[in-house]
Image (cartoon, rainbow, N blue to C red):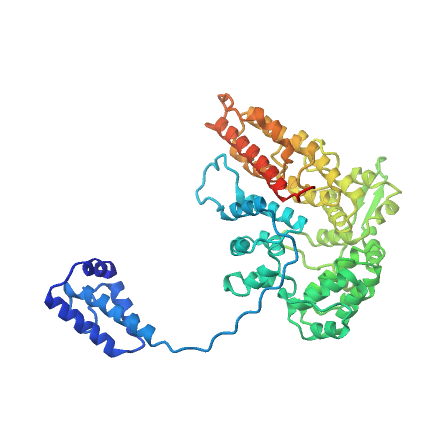
Amino acid sequence: MNGSSAAVRNAAAPPDTTDTTDATLAAGTVNARGTADVWEDLVTTALLGTDRRPPAGGAPGRAAPVALLDAAAVETVRRRAGLRPATAARRPEPAAEDPRPALPAAAARRLTLLLADRPGTGGGRRGASPDLMELLPQWLAAANAQGYAAPPETLPALLDAARGRTDLRPAALAFAGPRGLWLARLNPDWRFAQRAAPGGGAALPDLDDTDGVRRLWEEGLFAERVALLAAIRAARPTAARELLATTWATERAEDRLMFLDSLRPGLSAADEPFLERALADRSRNVRALAAELLSALPGSALAARMAVRAGACVAVDHTDGAPAIVVEAPLECDAAMERDGIVAKPPAGRGKRAWWLGQSVEAAPLGTWPRRLGGRTPREIVALPVTDDWQGELHAAWCRAAVRQRDPEWSRALLGTPGTQEASGPGAVSLAERAKLLGTLDAAERADWVAGFIAAHGLSEAFQLLGVCAVPWAAPLGRAVVDALNIARDAGSYPWSFSGVMGLAERCLDPAEASRLDGLLAVPDEREDASPGAGGYWAEAFQRLMTTLRLRADMARELTPAGT
């Protein structure tokens, strides 16, 4: 028998005296060598098998496996005995105290269960059991909202979960607190925690400590400088911009891009002079970002220049009696346009003039158009026909402008009513555009619009739209989703095509809606044209949905402070 397994099995049987003598000789030979590669030789012999490679000083046969094990035992003792005492490593500093209150006992037990769950590796049906790992982000958000500290014994599992899922990291690290960051420094597998923590986990100086701020800004690591700039921007926008200006000329292009993006929160007209200078930056990406930020300021000089350019391309024509929008796209992209952030070279498949038009319109203030187009409201402007097949290009640019400038009136006009015959709406060219437009509306209006869309068009196109709605879903939206799922079930629809919406419902439906699902748990009579097994799947899916909603209700109760 060959290999290490043969060695183990043969070692179990007592060898005869001749074998013992050979084994002792082999072990002595190995011990005498005492070279650094002895252990590697033994491992190689075990992998190849003693028939193919006998131990040093031995021969193939029954004694060879025993000799190999004896030699390994001798070498193990020799290696251990030969270790020299080393200077003791410096003990790590204790973790900082976490002043947050301890997690309630029931919630701590729940967290242990959520962290112990692992996604299934097989395909097919999911069964009726809730997917606990998908509930972990919601649990962490609720625990952080209550200000609880993570139990120390859960930190390793929590960091392991965040290591495997980047979407968990912000909430998981906030919940882990200073102990979690301290622990992450001791394990290379958790090094992501230091990268994700503001400033790499380093403590930022007091913002009133002028010397400390200046020293960290000039000497700190990049992550520390980004964190410092963000902290100052949140408290003192002008001071952050002035600090950035002190080293702007010497920063690397990729660093300038990140620092410039940190000015996005709290953007105001006071930032315009600095951003105007950045339009002349030697980096194209920096110039493009500066132009984007300036176009989000409707009163900026760049916005005024873009309004002139875009206005020269779009007008109302009454030649045929009824008013219509006519478009004359730019004939060239000159140096001034490029300085203001318009990219001259279009992507593959796009015409140059359409590309320049879209960039000009999306950067122009939306207030330009009522003045330019006869005092019409956004809804009236969007309703006008556009000649020569320019409608898609023009409306798509208005969509991007409405999202960039956070203009709900234009978003409503471009979305149209949710029950319109054309599901794409009058202006949005894709589900992604509609989802972005919905993001400019408040949560209640957003939910009402999506509920109306589902009632009119069903769930087949609603997945992306549901993803932008606040959690838990408002009651009208939740009812619309459940009703649409029920209609799909009764129609004998292919059930697995709704698994994504069902998964969203498990995480986003208000737990109070669980009582409405009782009538959906029975296996329905299958229609002749239904998918085989569809009825059982639907019953199973609704059972899982109801179980998950009740579990979420329990989670919320466990995290609610006593007496609340």
